[in-house]
Length: 237
Image 1 (cartoon, one colour):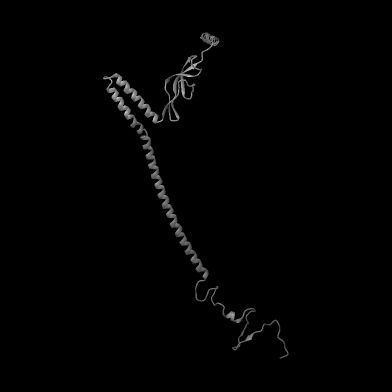
Image 2 (tube, one colour):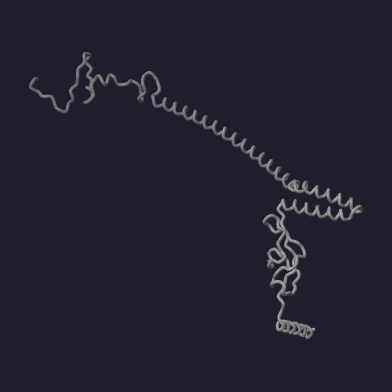
């Protein structure tokens, strides 16, 4: 009937020649796009090739393996260098210890070599002691001067003593003498010479030191003090 209207909620269907009805494609999608859609499942192409993402992952793994091999070779090279440096240092340390021991062992060799001439002169002087005593004395004096020169070159120098103010840092006082010929606390006699070795005191000088002469009053006070001490000692006994 031409006068009947088609309901609005019924979708139109196309009639194909074989009589089968097929739904029209959804809105917004043309027939050509539906036909060109890939036929494979899960988004894979029909030719069976892997997606480009997996090939990139494989390339990344190979690049990482290559970098790992390079860093491993570099680490081995550094380790070998370190081992060689450690061996060289150990050899150097042993050589330095050996040289230091040899230096301490033979440090006095130059001085001994210079003293050999002094020893020779002493032997000559002793050989002539019965022939000419005066010659022996002259030889000994020459040997003494020679020995002093050798020791002075090595850094030996005497400590000033006589007419010097007493200094306990370089003088050793073993005697005192009351005198008015010298100022108080002045070295008046050297009993044994002291020496410096370069800038270090080798041994102090043994000296006699002047003490000012006491006045009669001081002498009386000292005598009284001495008598008092003696009386106390006798009373205790």
